[in-house]
Length: 325
Ligand code: UDP
Ligand code: MG
Image 1 (cartoon, rainbow, N blue to C red):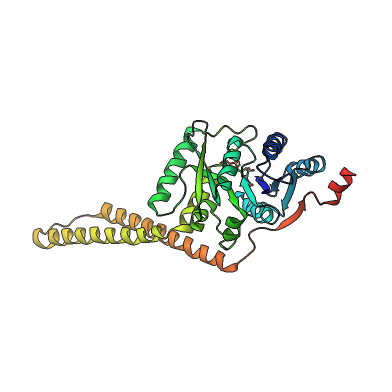
Image 2 (tube, protein in one colour):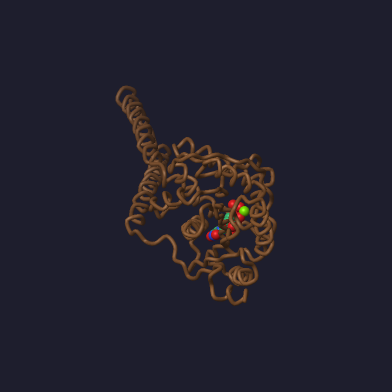
């Protein structure tokens, strides 16, 4: 029988953690009863350097609950890195992983469907939202624009899929070969290949606590996603430069003809100022975008570790053994 690990990245999630443990434990025990997964399946909570009681709660739960495992990162590295840490740790202990956010906005009922698809031979099963009614209007629209933009820029990703997915050990082994620092799992995983499928669900509201993705993080996440997978922004700069050069050529002609043929001496202060500021702005922006790519190359070239593990908790820990005796 295949062993399942549910991987849950947590950052300051003390408000929802206990509830999440209860829900996920009941999912796991239910699947065990149905003989779809092995009895030693587990839930791995990855503490992404939380500043609140999150890790304490994980430790407590690990002591009293045989299904709860923990992994503590040395400091906050962000959702994507925390998730990767959890997946790479879990793949050595389990055959299948399902990643899910700690706030359980994603419907846990489809985990069973995911496992079924795995048994049908899928190595990756994407959880896809079929509506976004519970998200705020702003989040919904910005996400929509983001997916469209990504698609137009040539980044392959599954529409309306966040990081709720099943991955087999085999798929994670492949994922580990993608050594980039700038992690954008949704963009990388479709590159792996293998047989994949989707399951559909509607997304609920956060049960408690606040979103850990404020606007600033959302924008930087979107920007990372684009610049890590596409060099189209650089191409667009060249095109923009071409267009502006063309129009300035036309206006130079216009000015010269006006001056030479008709003797117009245009005061021209306004147009000069406008073009100086406009061109200056375009140039700065363009240099910025190119700089972004150079910066990314620089960061990648360091080959730093993507996360550092501080401690792990699992069933073989002394504490857990003591508890059983
Ligand atoms: N998260 C994390 N590290 C961070 C920020 C978030 O591990 O630096 C986790 C968080 O605990 C949650 C998941 O990533 O389990 C998604 O975060 P959230 O629900 O706040 O994002 P939203 O659903 O609002 O996009
Ligand atoms: Mg959430």
